[in-house]
Length: 79
Image (cartoon, rainbow, N blue to C red; front, side, top):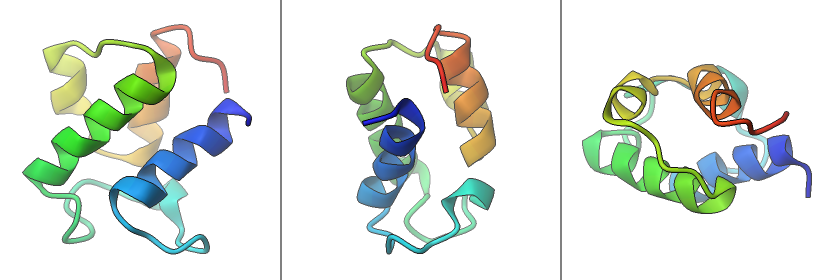
């Protein structure tokens, strides 16, 4: 599975979204599931899926689907 597909699937699974949900434009607190608890679930799932350990400032700054891509690219994940 390609990294971008894996990334999208993490969002879909963590937030229990439908496959046709527009995850690429998703932002923090845009949906009720992406609250502070959902955020930490997302972070843990991304760390597991991509075998990375995010820094505190990266976790705090991960406020959108696109920002998450930037954060993971900084950890040498290719999309």
